Amino acid sequence: KILQGGNIAKFDCVIANPPFSLENWGATEWSSDKYKRNIYGTPSDSCGDYAWIQHMICSMSSGKGRMAVVMPQGILFRGNQEAEIRKQLVESDLIEAVVTLGDKLFYGTGLSPCFLIIRRMKPAHHSGRILMIDGSKILTQKRAQNILAENDIDRLYSLYQNYSDEEDYSRIVTLQEIRDKEYNLSPNRYVVYHKEEIRPYAEVLAEFKQAYEDVKRLEKEFSLLINA
Image 1 (cartoon, rainbow, N blue to C red):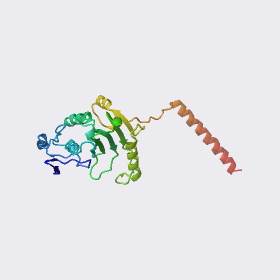
Image 2 (image 1 turned 30 degrees about the vertical axis):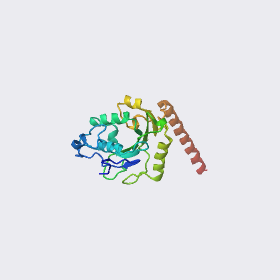
Image 3 (image 1 turned 135 degrees about the vertical axis):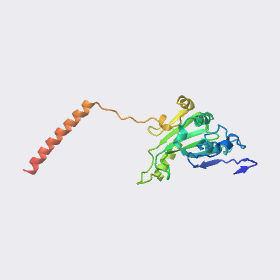
Image 4 (image 1 turned 45 degrees about the horizontal axis):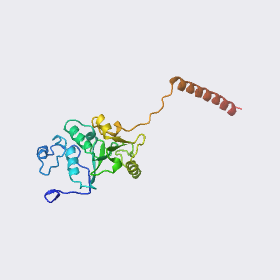
C-alpha cells in the first residue's frame, strides 16, 4: 500500500514483526505479483513468513538499505518451498546475522522467535559470512512470561556489534558451511558449546568416600568438644 512512482516504496531502514505463519495470505496473487516481490519464489498458502521477508527485502533502498524482521524459528529449517527460498536468500549474501531468542517472550504463541538482520550491502569483512547468535538463554525469567530486560538487550546487541566467535553464544560461518548443512540457518547447528569434562567414575567415587570419612571424623571431634 506504500508506493512510490507506481512501485514499492524504498526505505533505508525496514523493521517489522509480521504475523507468525499466517494462513491464506494470498499465495495465488503473489505468484504473479505485479510489483515483482516474489524474487525467490512463492511460499505455501498455509504459511506466509517468507512472503513478508521478500516484501521487506524489496522495500530496502539500494546502497545503505537494511532490515530486521522477527519470525518464528521454523523459517530457519523448514523444508519444501521454504527450503528453496531460504537457499536463494543465503546465496544472495544479504543476511548479516541470524539471532534466535528464548521461549515465552511473546504473548499468545508458544513459538520461539528469531530475527534476521539483512543488509543490501554488508561491510566488506562480513561478505560471504553470516553471524549466528544463540540468544535462547539470554532472557529474564518471569512467573508467566519471560522478558528481555535492558541488560539482556545490551548483551544481544554486544554479540552482534562484536561480530566474533564466542563460545556458547555466537559464531561466524561461511556460506560454504551453510551449504554443507543444506542451508539450515539454526545457530545451534553452528555455535560451539562448552563441554564439561567428564571425570572417571572411580575418581569421583574415591573423592566421595574420602569426603564421607572426613565428615564422620569431624562429627566425632565436634561431639567430643561439646561433651567435654
